[in-house]
Amino acid sequence: MTLDYLGEDTTDALRASATATQYVQLLGKLSAEGLTAGGAVEVSVKATAVGLLLGAGEGGVPGAVSVLGQRVAAEHVERIALAARNAGTTVTLDAEDHRTTDAALRIAASLRNQLPFVGSVVQAALRRTEADVRSLAAPGARVRLCKGAYAEPPAVAFTAKHDIDRSFARCLRILMSGPGYPMIATHDPRLIAITQSLGLRRPADSFEYQMLYGVRPDEQRRLAASGARVRVYVPYGGDWYPYLVRRLAERPANLALFLRSLGSKA
Image 1 (spheres, one colour):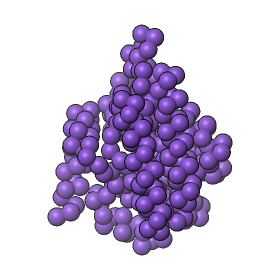
Image 2 (cartoon, one colour):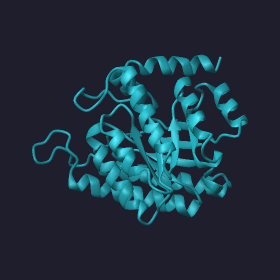
Image 3 (cartoon, rainbow, N blue to C red):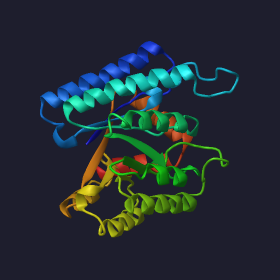
């Protein structure tokens, strides 16, 4: 299971610090209950939730990540990662708007020098991602591949579903043929089938599937019964409604996924 404390785009330093504290406390409680052994329960963190946007736009570039924001976010993510290490589990730094991609990847790469279990997330919708996964597919590196839920400009992202799926498949093949630990985050039957085919060439415990809580639960159980590793992604917290509204506004296609998740629980 991956737990994600909802909240992003924070521009208040106190709130960023409070979010980091929430994660540290959560990891302590999970560890005390014996739930984190072997990485059974981990956490996902959005860099903008812990300060990446502090001072954004300084220097006259709208939305640009500032030196201050990157420093504060890196400090908070390190604090969370140290708590994860003490709890015997892992932490994954989420992908967000394309303007934050470089900063998030830099933070994760820097932390991996001392905390190699810190994972990164890449989005197949971004045109840059195929190059990113080639550099990220290193021994032991934890990389989550997802399609991407953000509305991005065509200059930096594929916009047609077919192109996004093809990008996902290309990135998937790179990760599954590399020496890292791929985390394949999709509910798409075709992409799951491709993953299964590629997975025949590597140990079952050397990669995992990731799916949202409540979405295609029968498929989650089927994969787990086949011997595959399956991790359920669980967002939580009081910011759920603003989070949902933002996701639906950014990419209306997310509404279909949301409705399917409701139907799957019926």
